Length: 171
Image 1: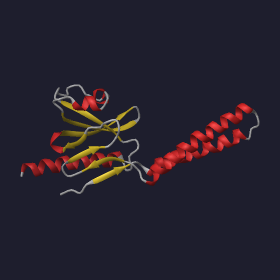
Image 2 (image 1 turned 90 degrees about the horizontal axis):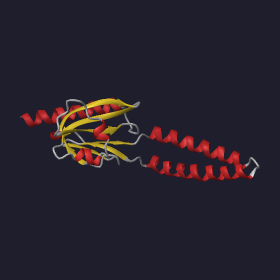
Image 3 (image 1 turned 180 degrees about the vertical axis):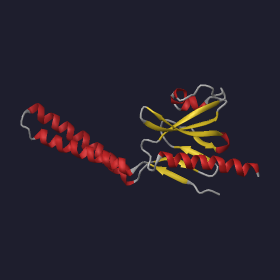
Image 4 (image 1 turned 90 degrees about the vertical axis):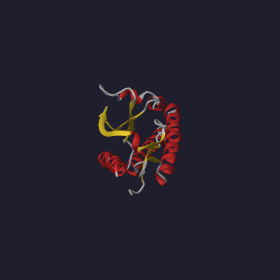
C-alpha cells in the first residue's frame, strides 16, 4: 500500500515573496525620509502594507499550507479554487500535465456525471475541457504554481497511484 503524501506550499517561493516585501518596506522607509508630505504619506502606506504582507507570509512560511494530499484511495485538492473534497482513484480516467498561460497545471480527467467539478471550480474546469471529452467527464485543473516539489514529479506520482489502484482492483 502506498503511503499518504502531503504537498505543501513551497517555502522557497514564500521566501522570495518575503524578500520582495522587505525590499518594499525599505523603499517605504526611503520615501518616508524623502521630506515632502506626499512622499512621506506614500512611504507610510508602503511600510504598513508591505510589513503586514511580510508578517502574513512569515506565518505561512512557518507552517506552509497543505495544497494537495495523495492517498492510497484518492486525492484531496485543498486549494480554494477547487473545493471538491476527496476524489477516489476510481473516478480518475487519466492525469496530464499542461501549460496554461505559462503556468503548469495538473489536469485530472474524471467521471463527473452530475457536473460537480464545473460548479466547484468556478468555470476553470470548463476552460480546460478538450475537444472529444465525453459529457459525463470533467477536467479538474490543479495549479502547481505554489507547490513545493516539481510539477512533473507530482504528476508522475498521481499517474503511478492511478495505475496501482487499477492493478489492485483487477486482482
